[in-house]
Picture 1 (cartoon, helix red, strand yellow):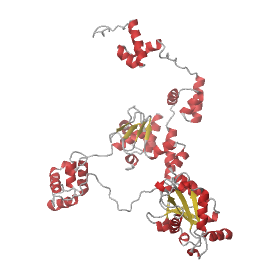
Picture 2 (tube, rainbow, N blue to C red; picture 1 turned 30 degrees about the vertical axis):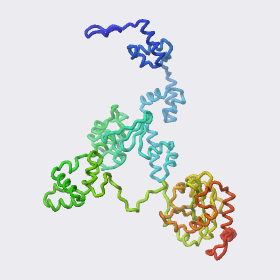
Picture 3 (cartoon, rainbow, N blue to C red; picture 1 turned 120 degrees about the horizontal axis):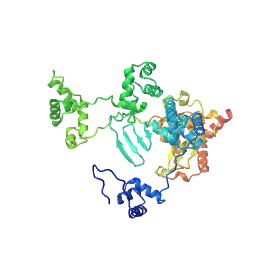
Picture 4 (cartoon, helix red, strand yellow; picture 1 turned 60 degrees about the horizontal axis):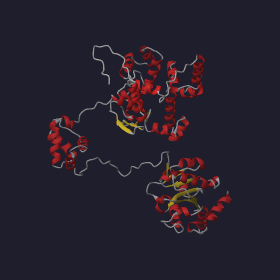
Amino acid sequence: MTMPPREGTPHKRRRYSPQEKAAFIAALERTRSIAVAVRECGIPGPTGYMWARQSGILPKKKTPRKYSPEFKAAFYAALDRTEKIGDACREVGMSIHTGELWAKKVGFDAGKARRDQRALFFKFRVDGLHQAAAGRAAGVSPVTASLWDRGIRKSGNKLTYPDGRVFDYKDHVTTQLSPQAFASMRAVETIIDPRYLSLIEREQIRDLSSTGSSIRTIATAMNRSPSTISRELRRNISARGTYEPYGAHRVAAGRRPRPKDSKLVVHAALRKFVAEKLQVRWSPEQISHGLIKEYPTDQEMRVSPETIYQGLYVQARGALKKEVQTALRTGRTRRKPQTTGQERRSRFVDPWLTISERPPEVEDRAVPGHHEGDLIIGTLSRSAIGTLVERTTRYVMLVHLPGGHSAEEVRDGLIATMNTLPAHLRGSLTWDQGSEMAGHKAFSLATDMPVYFCDPGSPWQRGSNENTNGLLRQYFPKGTDLSVYSPEDLEHVAQELNGRPRKSLNWDTPAERFRDLLLSN
């Protein structure tokens, strides 16, 4: 191998022998990698690529495409019409990278349409639309709507989560950004005071500055001080040297916190007092009040119980786990969320009505057409039958669910069953808070029937349905596979139940009372 030239001597172009070139081609054919072959043979990368093209292993470089002024005018016309670079490039038949360069030269804002879609999506969400419905109305895919709703930003092949995690779904690698590099969504969206620049104002700064407006012109248009605009453009510029409003807003939000050490870390005497009392089994609350009695005039010797608890639980994550377990009576090393038993996570995304909102005429059974419903579940919860009872006549209808009891299956089965009734007998439906009724809004839209949900653990609030389910277990015992029953079998069971006389109906049958309702109408 030829030695590199010494310092001070003029550099001469290296010449390679035919044997070196043949050795490189052989290594390239064996490894199928130019990078590996050039390292193995000790030649520069550009030389390796040149030999590979000469040998026909790599195709020769394409000559750059030349565009006529008419072609460029056609692209700009398509861009004005579609307002999307990708659509304009496909229409005229050119590379999207070239289209982005041309669009940038004329000041086209490629992200404006996407920002408008995002703003429209969140407007629909504020108006009460479901996530998927808001996405369709804004013209974005369900995946994009889900990412926006969860505060996840997608850039290239990376997803950035609100807590600062960055997931590269190409390499399947997760990294964590520093708090200064990434502010949480709550911090970004929090409006501190009107004297701080908002995201809308930062977008206005970007729009005005991109048109060449001076700092004083921007300040006058926004009714802000020129120093505010100057400082904003200087401090919050991106790594590429451009001003991006969303990035600038996140950087500004990341500078808001003023982190400081805990009082127990800074104050040695206070820390010693707390440690001594923890060793003799004092609780944090006892320590906090003991400090007031021990040091009545020293305001520095004050600490809240919460500060002590935070110090303990932070320490418990490290090497002092065993020591912290002995410091608290519970022996916990992690904080346990305190609940009163009243908190309950909603099972439904859409707004829903509670039984307390049900009209009084439904409660006293004075008006017919109001129903109670539930599911009877088969073995291993793999099959189910929907049960519906009309409150006034006790008339029973059974819903066939051959595909399972998911929210979609139950919704479609209930809609098909209820639409067999006349409009005056489709008043309302009362159900428990089961996840199978997650599609209650779609059911109400299709049948014009509101759905009222019972309180948790209160089956007596739909007593007619509970009693009917007990009667149905004569036909469908617990632990049986309910998927083997056909719609004809369910219709036969419903006819038998509706043909039984009831004491609550003055010994009439539900079928007779229901028939009278149909005839009276």
